[in-house]
Amino acid sequence: MAEEISVVVVDDHAIFRSGLRADLDHRITVLAEAATVEEAIAAIHQHRPRVVLLDVHLPGGIGGGGAEVIAGCTQLLGATSFLALSVSDSAEDVVTVIRAGARGYVTKTISGTEISAAVFRVASGDAVFSPRLAGFVLDAFGTAAVASVDSELDRLSARELEVMRLIARGYSYKEVARELFISIKTVETHVSAVLRKLQLSSRHELTRWAAERRLL
Image (cartoon, rainbow, N blue to C red; front, side, top):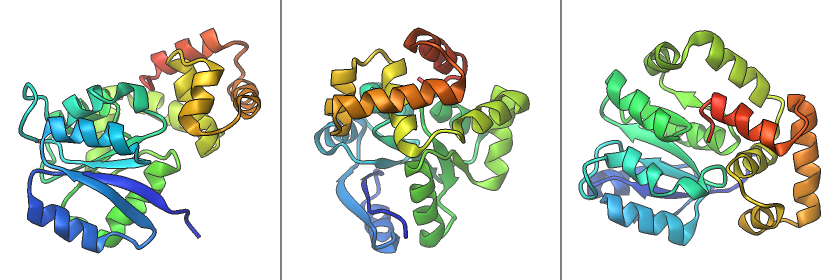
């Protein structure tokens, strides 16, 4: 049984947001909706959802759309995962938003059941793409590199993945504990497990490891 997941829905079409909310699995709770870059960044910082369902093309900001929203929420990456949801299936859009930090990209042609499944997968740390879009990511980042990262990340639990990303971004143990609502002792335990599983010896090596794999 999947855990309950909190989300923020970002799309500039109210009818689509309403339909998506109705189609999502009952274990997915929509905390807020947003229609512009500015509204999205504010809502995400306020509600700190587990997943953001993010349209790629949005009004507002300086024209960066979904990628600009992610850039405005960089410090939340790890605790919050972004799943791009768009009518566009162009390679440029896919690669741009993935480089910005999104964990997945699916098109709006998929069903509510499929979108819900993608939300649960992204929340657990998986990368999710509509089948034909995965090729764009492999072309942009390299098949071997993507396979290697996926294999290494598969060793980590969802919580270890969250802790790893925050530590790699320079958060202190105390800041990680506050961000994830866990004790400092628990953070230390997770960090030790991450370093052991990835065969690294320090948080400095972890930061370099994550940076080389574009996980920051």
